[in-house]
Amino acid sequence: MNLAKKDIATFILLTLAMIVCVRYFYRDMADERRVAAIDPYLSLIATPTAILSISNPPMFKEYMLPARSMRQAIEAYTSPIFLSMIGQNPHLPTFLIGYYPKGDILYAPMDSHSARQAFKWLDSAFAFSPRQQQEGTVSVRYYPDTGSRFLGCYYHEGLFVASYDRDLLLKTIKRQIEKPATVIPELATLPTKSKRAGINLFACSDSLDLHVATTDSTVWRLPAQWLTLNLLYDKGQLRCYNEQPYEEGIDSLYLSLSDTIENKLRQLFPELKTAVQVSHDESAAYFLIRAY
Image 1: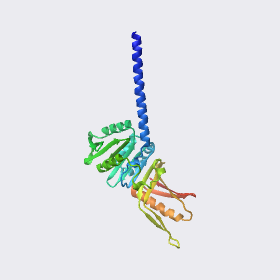
Image 2 (image 1 turned 60 degrees about the horizontal axis):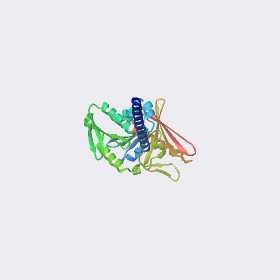
Image 3 (image 1 turned 90 degrees about the vertical axis):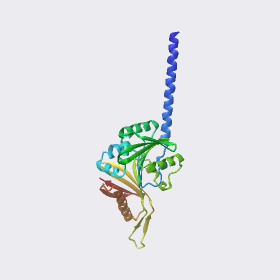
Image 4 (image 1 turned 120 degrees about the horizontal axis):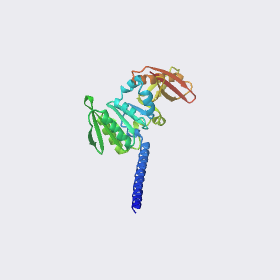
């Protein structure tokens, strides 16, 4: 009889353990599906001057962060704590950094477990404990930093957000709660295929009129748009790729455009030296800028 009671108790415990395991398994699956469906571009507020999209965090950590010239160039615009956080979490699918005149803001889709680990890491990275404050329906942690600054961080519906600028945080919270179906109008022209591939820098570019020395004084007008640079690191050099539609017979325009792209990159990263190369096939012109 005692043996039977023991067997029943064991069976009940095993059943409960199995139920708990199944519950956690399906909860993790639900978390992963939600994270995979998150588009951080939807939470970007108006109007960024540049966007750094990191869809390959391992490559960013392994090759770009250790490169002194590259890290210095990025740190000129990016909060160092953001770069450290990316280096600590290369397993995450993507990071997005929006740059604004008043500061930068980090977006990172992640599951609840990764969010807890991120907050735990931040707790150890700062000398003082954070102050927790309710901003509407979202709880935000403010970490005191040097220079009377506070790093605000929150995790809401699968998206981790951090910024030193409270106004950027509050506007992002408002937009995220509104659950927008489309990106802000300023981002409508971002090339879709580049948004989730590799490491890309999107820089807001002014309209450009290129005058060609021909008998009819042709003007090639490029509207204000986002300049897209695909970033790779190879043999100690940063390589930036840009692609434009190719039209036969106007090769001189592409040389002028390459100068414009190179100048834009120098404006963004004055610490880097650059060299540009232009090539083309029947459908596209390719711009390769080596930065070191």
